[in-house]
Amino acid sequence: MQSELADETQRGTEGTKTVMLDQQSVGRLSRMDAIQNQAIAQAAQARREQLKSRIQSALARIEEDEFGYCVECGDEIAPKRLDLDPTTTICVTCAAGS
Image (cartoon, rainbow, N blue to C red; front, side, top):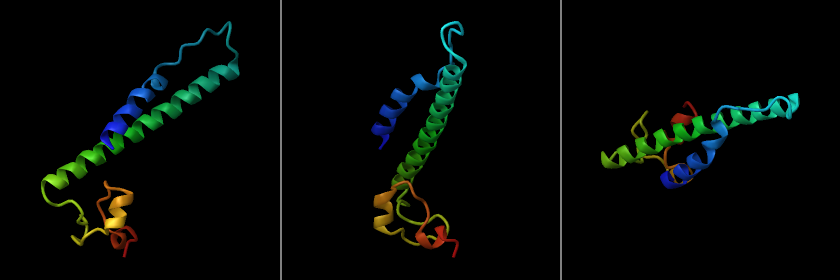
């Protein structure tokens, strides 16, 4: 997951740069499009940074032999839940608020 995330981050960096347009050759809607695309790229970058943090946290839990256990109640997290999202920290019961 970390290597895939690093690849995505590398590809996504270009879209987060400041929008510089020649206003003589680009219309108002094109500028708005470029600004909107930049905002989308920045939001995607923020999501990647959040996922990176969650992956690092999961790796730390593995090192501490706490991976796979709910941080709320201490019960074991279902293996299928971990297969879907290995960065999850809570069991289904706690996620449901029960």
